[in-house]
Length: 366
Image 1: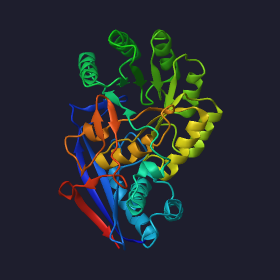
Image 2: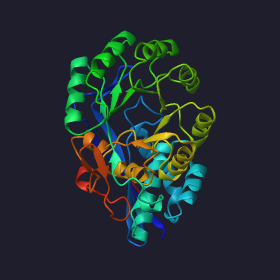
Image 3: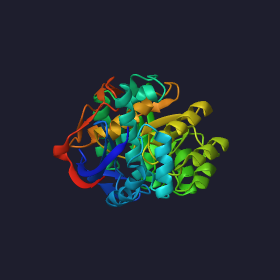
Image 4: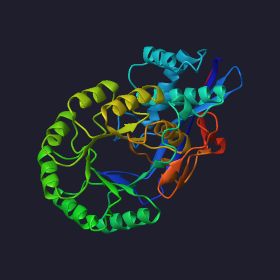
């Protein structure tokens, strides 16, 4: 099997809510997704999707992804897509960094590997270890009354894991969390996500003021070193996200005992091939994982859901259903969601089919 062509598509994903807002004054209503389709000499095609969460969240810019893919395409055309590690070697030789662009091709290769073997990707990643995956829902930053309304709605829909976006003043967020905590049920898991917006002293003020509340703190400061300092002084469970961008970063955090949990965003690390290694390191170290991505529709959700489903339940904190955060869908066959949990089909590959009526063709490389 050889890759004969690479087609690059783009599409806009409007957010279902009023605005997806988080700390630092960042707010977005529409996200630009990039979908890659690899066609092989056997007639099989595989798809991958990546979608940065706006231009100011991670080291990726949606409008630059097609340019990165134009650099990567010649390095993988003619290669066997089932040789996923070899594909990564070729991409790394062609382009330094730009893991998100590489992830689009990598995910499409895993889709092809599954289709060629007749197996769902979760089987190839280790087997179906978490057939029913707990989901978290994000309460975007807004006025307290709006955030409370979102929380109540998600609970009524069956979600028991809630990620609350923080980023008002410290005093306002203390009051917000104390008010919302009156609604917290014993079986719920809550995460306060600050998205790297606070100084160390601000985090410590917040943590000490709500020390009696059962709450994870997620990425409160910008740098790893700042977060580690807070981690060593706070009593809350600690989750890292933005400051971890490679396997080496994760290994360092494990050595330093810097976290209780990690947000493993598949595209940020370069796709399923590197993410499965990071997943296994965290399983071995006893670090819980939210396995997800920055944004996306059904193809992106399917990719990280296969990694989550092949993760031991003891290590899977939760995942999410990003395809349901959008008003449009780019593929059929996305994972099923019911009562705050997600399940996958046993269809080969990722189990999804792109809807080309929703996609705009950007380039084709042969």
